[in-house]
Amino acid sequence: MKCLVVLDAGHTEKLQVKQVTDKSLGKSDFNNQTHIYYRVVVGNYLYRKNAETIVERLNNLNIDSFIVVFSKDRKKYNKVIAGIYKYKKSAQNKVNNLKDLGFDAFLDEYKD
Image 1 (cartoon, rainbow, N blue to C red):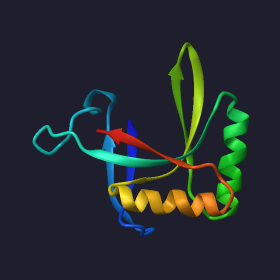
Image 2 (cartoon, rainbow, N blue to C red):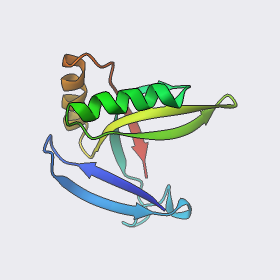
Image 3 (cartoon, rainbow, N blue to C red):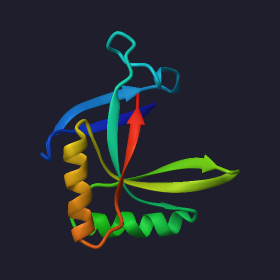
């Protein structure tokens, strides 16, 4: 079971928490439409220890973050996510805030 947390309009409150199974990924509960969310990525790391160090730094700044593992070119990478937003503008504001704090953050579109 996977959990998707979506934040809204630059607020720290949770807009929606949706639990999905692997079978339901890629399909929406709303008329089989695909929804786009914006993930704030703080880095992709080959070594999990490096990703954990970034998560710890973010947590020390009271910024919730987590690691998502993905494969590319037969290698496993650790993606550090510092938020998932429904609105691109909100996500970009978070990216800008993280850049001001010295992190190399960027946006990643996520479809469900």
